[in-house]
Image (cartoon, rainbow over all chains, first blue to last red; front, side):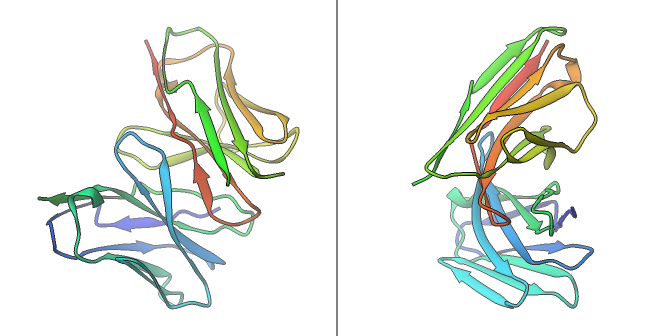
Length: 110
Length: 111
C-alpha cells in the first residue's frame, strides 16, 4: 500500500475564499480519493478520481490529478465555516488497502 | 442503502483490561472490512483488514487482534490493554477496490 502526503499541514482562510490542498504520492495508482473528517468524527468520502481522469467536479469541490507528477489537488470554492475539517487524500493500492497520511487541517473563519 | 455501526462510542478502560469493539455493516454483502486507529491530530493507521469471513490481515504488530465471525461483523479485541492503545478507532467497509465508508468511531481512553 502507499500513502498520500497532504500539503499544507494546516490552512486557515476566511469564509468565501477558495481553499486549495495538494497531495503527492510515490507509485502508480488506479485511482485517488479524497476524504473529509470533522473533528472527532468518522471520515466521509468526498470524491474519487480515476487514473485516466484529469479533473473532476462535485458541487463546490474540484479535484485534479496529474499522474506524470504523481500529484493531486483539491479545491474548495466559496468556502464556508462548515468546511472546517481535516482532508485526506488516499492513493489507491492495487491490493485495495488504503493508507492515510496526516491530512490537511482546514479552518474557515466566519 | 448501506449503513455501518460501531459501538461503543466512547470507552474508558484500565490498563490490563480486555477490549472488544464491534462493527457491523448493513445493506451489502461480502464487503471488505477495515479497522483503523487514529492518534490525536494524525492520520489513520490501518490495523486490520478482511476480505471475507475468517480472513484477517494484520498490518501492524501489536497486542490487538481482529475477527470476522460473520460476513458483516468485524470485531477488534485485546486481552490486555496498554496505555498506548488509547486513540480513536474507526471501522470502514468497501466494495472491492473502491471507496471506503466509515463508521462514527470509538474513542478509547486507557487509564
